[in-house]
Image 1 (cartoon, rainbow, N blue to C red):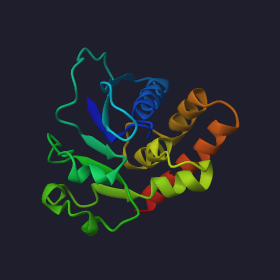
Image 2: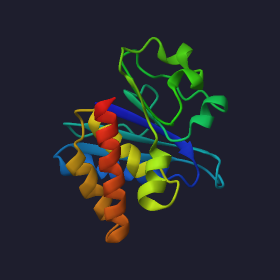
Image 3: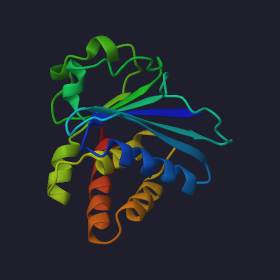
Amino acid sequence: MFQIRIHGRGGQGVVSAAEMLSIAAFEQGKHSQAVPSFGSERMGAPVVAYVRIDDKPIELREPVLDPNLLIVQDPTLFNAIDVFTGLRDDGWVLINTSKNLDDLHIGEATNRLPAGHVIAVSATELAMKHLGRPTPNTVLLGALAAMSDEIDIDAVCNAIRKKFPGKVGEANVLAAQDAHRQAAAA
């Protein structure tokens, strides 16, 4: 089973990202599950969502405690919570940032990971370019498709179009494809 934990802040589309990722996996013939975890948080408060993808039915319903992959939509969370808790030693990390990874001061948590398993994509900048809004969720899903064999970019684009039909969806697809190219080159 491939498990993903998505960290972000209220208003960044964390829950929507989990839903779209689950739909994309389902469209590829896999079993998938999206589980949001939030209370009465307000805009800007930390939010987390979980996604599981497997070739067989998924019976777990609890939070993802030992993810294969972390998506960090807001790097300021590194100073607020320990997003790396439970990350597997062979895990992957996808971070929304335009900063150099050394400038994030997360080496203590990421140095144990295999080389190339920490990818940074300037998702907010790509979202502003394509959408005119700082929502990194769909952008990061495109990058995820470049990092993982669990999901492909066509499935991500189809899931985005289902969630956001019309011009909004197409703009999000362009942003995801742009991030896919950026992550593939990393």
